[in-house]
Figure 1: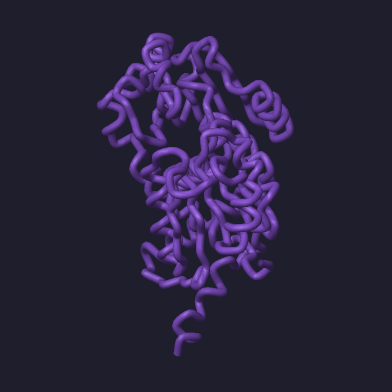
Figure 2: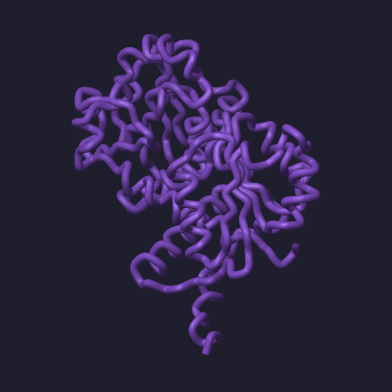
Length: 330
């Protein structure tokens, strides 16, 4: 009877699945346009089956994920733990105080000799992107970037899933980023053009996106025929936009810079005045947690704000990745 109960499981990935065998997920830079579109499709499929059709999909029964967190987390931790459990797997949450990574034990020992033997996949939320690269180099199991100083790819998949659900189609949309040139922006820059999305960016002087990321974003924009516009004027960035996006001005590890950053970001708060120059169908995104200086209550709690569906979609997009790997090769 168990075979009959689970007969629908093998039909989840009905379109030609993205081949993730042997691939880690550190940045969407490494994924093609078709691959990203497929990842979004699988996310929507899983969401529909599990949330609305109440299907039970034990795709990860008997599997375990090691969650290594150097930074605090709400959405990444909860979405991964609940998502992995919903799929029948067992999540193991490990903080830097719990394990010896980079302290009493090298990442090579932790990743290749311990975690690769005990777990099936690793999600790591770290300060430095090089930590992830070291884990990948030494690991025989996939590594997922749960956040680093350079990229936050699982957030961007949730953002684009949210926009796809709201607008119906992504191609031709214009997204305006108003804020810090940080890891979330970098992930937008590696993804937008591949989905046919135009990107308008406003950052204060001295807070520009990484130069190598910008160079690649320009290449992608030219390749896919999309617009990439950079300015230091928030209103100009918002002009003609469908989607207004911002993020924290002070990331974890930058607390000593808080006073100076708030001063430098003066005028960058997203308000209804900012939205006045956007398109009539404008919406708002923020990956959370949010501070009022970044976006006022009138925008944040308005019907145009998609921040809470965006937060929920973190679960469905991470679940998509967890189901896409080939665990049989271990």
